[in-house]
Amino acid sequence: MATKTEVAAAARALFADQGYVATTIAAIAEAADIPAQTIYSAFGNKAAILRSIAWEVAGTLDIDRAHEEALAQPDPRDGLRRAANIQRRQFEQMYDVIDVYQEAARTDPDIAHDLQTIAANRERAFRRHIDAIASHLAPGVSVDDGVAIYLTLVLPEVYRTLVIEHRWTTDSYENWLANALITQLLRSP
Image (cartoon, rainbow, N blue to C red; front, side, top):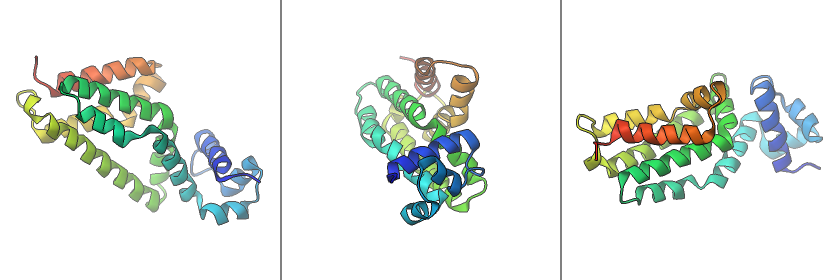
């Protein structure tokens, strides 16, 4: 019998290949070699499977600790470099899940709510970082401007454009992001 992890792995592959909407519980059950009713009993619905995948992957990244380490850097440039590394690792490990979440949010109100909650949490984390470096912001860049710049630079669409569509390496993406954050947010040394 397949475990929840195996069901999640089968679902993740199908979501990436076919999309969220086109993937059925029956298809997940077939891929995991388990009865569909077992999946319904274990997860309840497709949205719960997607949430399980996201939580499992995000849990391996320890993002909260990484953000704390970025905030603890005495040089704001080093903190932003660490923030770029966090974003790179997050996209490397779960861009496909983020992409599926965005697709699912267009048709599933519960997933749309999840995505709004995630976006609000990200904005709070980024605001905390910008608040911590406020005295180093470039002239004319307010904390609100800094948050907006940060949020824009780390959009999944930017990662997709650079890494997936234009085939940048993730190292190149991380370096670009770090430099963009530093030059757009901080005053010159």
